[in-house]
Image (cartoon, rainbow, N blue to C red):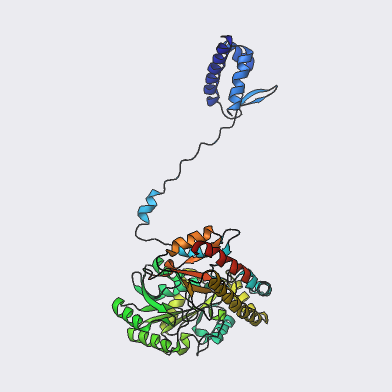
Length: 465
């Protein structure tokens, strides 16, 4: 009974002291133990135990020989901010980056990467880029504002490389291929307008078009590239004034637009009074030489050409060129200037140093030797482990476009493959509308070796076998 009485006395004193501590500022001293004994008519033991209880709760700090002090109070947990108002203000427009973020997200450790839009680091000209960047950074004017439109020497290099009568004045240096797409589409088309795209097509152009308020209209692609008959129908039905295409080493199929179709595509666009946006992202990834770009056959400013070197170098070397002739060139330059001013001069100078060095042709020879071996290794592994799958033999680029058997869900297959330790891309997101069949995109440029490509297919076979 005495123990219970002592416990109740400790609890009662502790309750009283909590109230008292609440009135004190942090660091302020409580009455002495003797004073508490007298005031509350309890024993020194009860005071000691009550103060110990409050110290355990973090309310007081006891200092031997000095007394007890009110502890610093923890800041009250902040209420979560209410951002609900933004849903109303932002209504009517959204930006869906899911497909692009999937392609740019590094795979988990231990996963074989059969998906990716860039060369494996072992294939990138890392040393040559580092040397080029060091030389560029030492230039006295490296950090000065560049000429609007780009440094003259780099514009001249792109003009020579593209050929077809392109002059340096036709070239605008940009912040990489993706930014080029954004600038070009916004320059050509108002929000709400239709834009024709290949089906399937590059995920990034679908994301840009939709974020810009454009309506992508699909035009089917086969082994020879876009079908001109269906392109003409799409122009007639939609009233579109621009067509986006990848004539060389199409992503994701790897198709190269045939010579006969190249002429017909330009003729169809001419009849429709429309522009052709030519995305020439993979020209330097040719296993076999690609045909000249469409702009080389264009005499009336129909083609807006995007030349990018990022795929052939490294992800962060984000410098490209937009080539256009006539009034549209000024529209594109004005759009770029308003939206982003200009690309960073050190990157422009770095790229110029790289492509002007002896290391550049050596690098191109190296990747043209590596890519066919990797492509064939991936196709051989598929024939061995998954003979039921069908894949073409691309003559360039980084990908195989693989047809899955009917009845399979390619998104579910990709998710199951990731759980099995291999990253692949489902085909469905590459289609602007409904996919006609299930596909996978398998990349042979993103894995570390031919052996890793074979291991990735073996893991994929555990899902599909």
